[in-house]
Length: 156
Image (cartoon, rainbow, N blue to C red; front, side, top):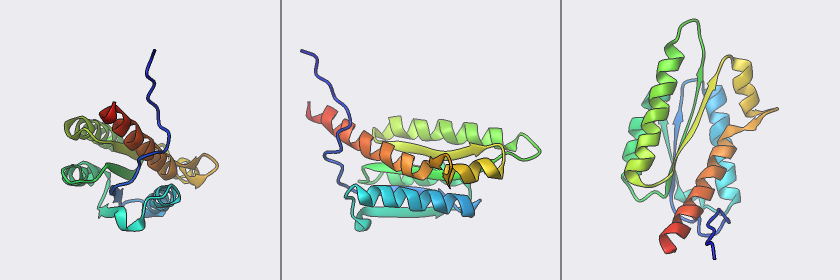
């Protein structure tokens, strides 16, 4: 018989870290609010949330690394890089995504990519509680599911 493991919302308790960029804070703090709401609605205590505010998206990985070294069960990284007149955004987005992926593998815990990579402010607004939803909420939901899945894997 095939053993199936999927997120069931069980066994999600523990401390969660959230690293949020202060750059574009009108967007990123909406992502933060959505993430916190999703985690607490799922039963995670506010006392089990650690929020770290960093200057910009570029700084997300180093703060995430420090948090991943601790007893946190997951680290959510939230930010917003909005394309300007140069290709600067591409370099930031590529390096941050690569670094966060490496951290997840290195520490064997969910390190979530909640970085908006938008062409303009309007797209960012739509993804921070607008007509496309709140990507902070989605990031938190993914963290909860991954904590559940990884614990099931460990128990099997």
